[in-house]
Length: 368
Ligand code: GLA
Image 1 (cartoon, rainbow, N blue to C red):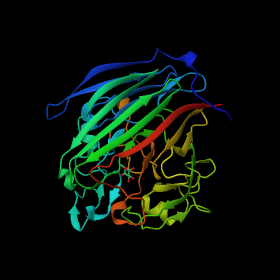
Image 2: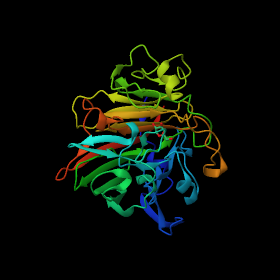
Image 3: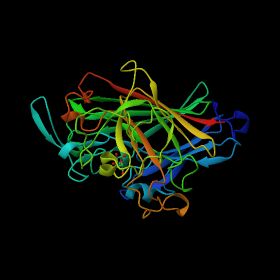
Image 4: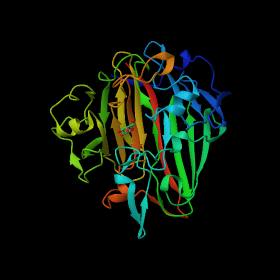
């Protein structure tokens, strides 16, 4: 099998950025949509609402385009969404036990919005904010710089957090996402992108036939509320071993306590990496039928692999097709869940004067 960037000769249009209105929120804030076109034929649209990646058009082996990410056609879909489809997630992506943590001798209580735990920043996380957006064109790359200020006390978090996220699409079909943040008081920070992928095309079926490889020899097992127990467990001999390519569905129904607790895969994998801060391979995903693939590299220590177990077909997505059970999967690069309560996990505490920085690159490819 060979992996290549999509064929530039099949590009629908030259690289560029289109900007258009996308309605206004229930609160009256104007929202815009930005469409990034690259010479590779990969086209990505992004909303100022939630920094959402609304669509990702990727050519298959024959050049046929499909939209490989789940989402909605209109803004009210995103305003009502509870699945974080395509959104930027913060101030803390993933769960914090009971929404509680102590920092520098003080106890903090965050919004408890998921079975008594704090999830993805709370009731109104960064996924519900309207971000300011500035287009960026640089040596053949097209991109966007998104900015958001989270005030002191937002969802219970200490300090004013200034967040910047850059999306940059390269001529060979890579989407580089750079996260940065500064604060005026110590606070936990964990930022991620919550796109759901279906490489056969959004709305086309489930993701059980996708082939996944994860560069992880350990994962963080969870309790019944999906909070890590603190253990870093070897994947060897378990359905969590994706160190060689395996279909997502091959073992998802196995008699395994961790799969039972989460209703499928919904776990953080500990990435194998030579250095703590270099960009390293995290995941390779492919749809063997169309040949579409994604290679994910990141500077983060973990990746949450979530198989859309909470999607239940009750919410209509793009083109009036419901988001059915396991019709998309998320691969969320991140620090480990509940890190503020686990001193042995890599720290997520950002202090005044320091810069939070992380980078994740999705390379949309074709595998022959
Ligand atoms: C993450 C979590 C899941 C679920 C989804 C959103 O991926 O790990 O448990 O909450 O977000 O529905």
